[in-house]
Length: 398
Image (cartoon, rainbow, N blue to C red):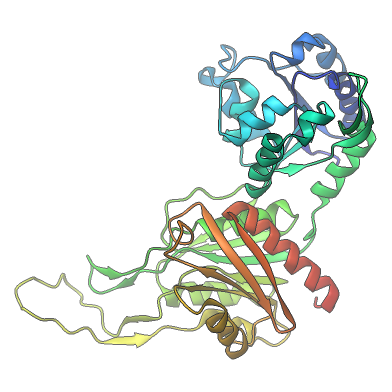
């Protein structure tokens, strides 16, 4: 945990007093801690208390005149390597689940690319309420972790689930989350489309946005891996801690990806690589006028199959984007390309797949399958990498 940057959010519950002890434990573990208090939290405990134990000014206002451009939430969101909200009240969980951003803490939770963890704390009946449980499911599907709650006596006099985990337990949760299942591993991810030039103006492309591949790269970095992202032409920001190599066409992607994969532990082919490319791109723009044009196409390299065939190569994961017969086509690709794992996802239906924030993934391996279900691409990327890490450990590969 030494050197980690954790932003601790405290919301308005009686368990806020435990957060002071949590800050002390984090500091003892070598963590750099910044604290954000909601308005409700300040009714239970003062900013001065957290300033004394953290050694830093405490943040309470959305628009901060002392911050760069007055936008302290953006500065904090970029600074954080991990966000922990402890305690997280039922009200805060509901607001975050519905994307509200009406105070500093909720806004930076939306603005950060860092992993977010919540430590729920509330009355046992509030925790059991279907609305709270539905909100928690929404957050889990978006990749937000929930630590607890514990069960026991509560300040209201009732007994049951809803107590915030003790500081020592939360520290352990953070340590496990920070260490990561891919600590020390080298991961190569391909993402986005490839553009195959017809002439200097036109190209053959596809609808891949790159969002799934970028989510996989980000999840791998969060899990502790050294990540190289080979990205086709997309307009996405590079995830924190990820090395990005931009390419355009399938042949260029193949040259970079195979070279990097030779020394990787895991190779994940998420890119929607063109199957064909023009045999002889025109050196000048093809002028309109001829009623019919013929385009001579040749096959592009099969990047993931080539990586899977490497001697002592990486654990190789492919993606199968299908519009029909999902399982059948994915199993055929898994066998034909001799992959260790394939992630099958249906595209073009129910708002999932290309150009969407959501996806639905079925993992297939030579010895079984795991249905990850529906969710955000960020959430499914985390589940995918957890499965890969488990199989790496089980198989003893690398």
